[in-house]
Image 1 (spheres, one colour):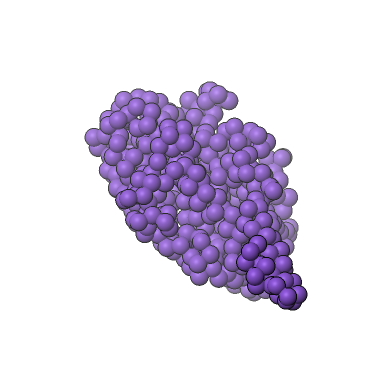
Image 2 (image 1 turned 90 degrees about the vertical axis):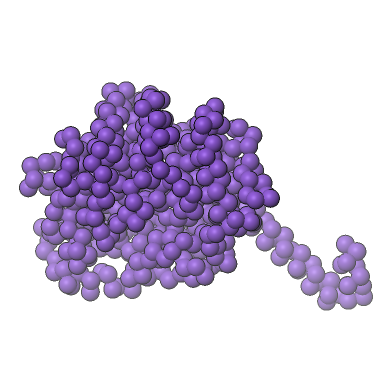
Length: 493
């Protein structure tokens, strides 16, 4: 107040300027403290997963513009592969990202069960998980064999058509003893093990089926080792399979508490400090799960606690060990092309770890600095808030939510209008009709978190810019837990 009186004495114009500045500052401060309608964002994020379903849709299916699709999947090979999820904006079912989607969604359902119950979404999350696990049980019904892909990605990418009308080949790929795929087998094992915990108190018989299949898939994964390249160049495993083996063993131990899995973790598994958590790199997730066990009394898991801390230290911008690029607007940016998956992945792990640290009254040590649970959660919230609209462009990156949300998501089903099932479409002309059309999608892809802005916070809402406008199932599965926590503990103000 002394500053104001000195600068404005005898100057009415100056006083008005200062008053206006204070009002504006108050508004900005209020905006900075404001929270979003996380309840709505949570609900919509789950609706997007429903829009990605393949197969015969249930009667309570919410995206009204979607219909049954790919009802003959696997028939030529005499196996039922109907169901599962399309991974992103195309019509192929890829095993590796689908399994990671289910693993992380199950983790959210386990860790944030009370928050999801409070939001009225626990049943919808369980249904989303079961849509994936039902498919995996069919895909892995024979021992030492797992069907891992349905659809020809090359021909699929040459035709811009909704899944209900697609005529592109539904080729099937599999892994077995002679053509192993350790990453996919282990990730599917992790998904089934995590899901078994979700259904343990709901459907014990089903949970047992999931756990038994998780065990056999893990044995298959570690006995017949090899990287599967069949999903390249779309889902190549650049990180190798050691992270998936550690991840699967960790989930199996969490689900069973059997010493065989802990022995594997301690004596055979390989771990490494990383600064990323994604469908291709799971070390950080396993390290955080194992850190929880360490704090609960498994003192021989101390190294995993150090590696979990290292992940946090590499991301936090105020850490002396910071490595990850943060955009001028404050967003984690690892690489172009669905970068939002790294944002939600980081937010999810920060949120989970913040709760673990709080429960055990511990901190993260980064060089000469310590960070408590509140700091971790503040960073997680900052990342989610950016995606929901608190960013330099003042726009939401979730379709159908907030201010100026994306309208041209790179997504076949959303961008192609409903039509008769028997309508014949020319694949070359499909790009003229719909892909290159500079207009909002006719069907709202509610809840989809698109790829997001570049490293300088720039964004172009254009269907052809897939790096910025294509959504993925795993981007949303990683957002569900954080949004549930924010919905309960950070109500809109």
